[in-house]
Length: 123
Image (cartoon, rainbow, N blue to C red; front, top):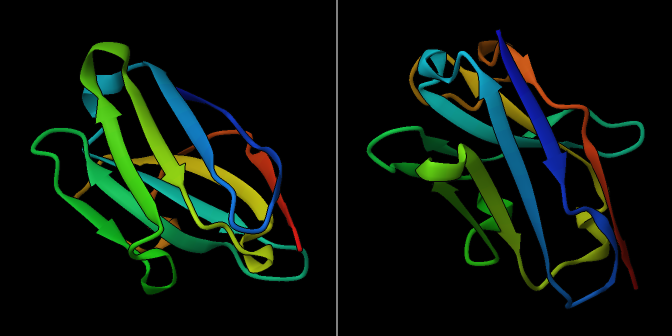
């Protein structure tokens, strides 16, 4: 079992920045890919970014390229999502997820999920 805990959400003005953190515990040797997803009210949960647990390959949704950066700290079993130039449309609950398989944008491929952290961007 893998346990994921997110932190770092909050309220920020448009153009501002936030950094989300996701710390993994438990059977982290089961993890191959870590991802961030988000879900806005009334919308489907969508892929934001992913990084392989080893090797450091990373992937982004088109709508965050150049604004968001995913990174990891192996020593802390933590993955980060640095979000810059935030827009009101980035408002959502952001979820950290872990997959035992290779990189995927499909939320159904991620077995473990955090509880989510709210990000609100005011205009």
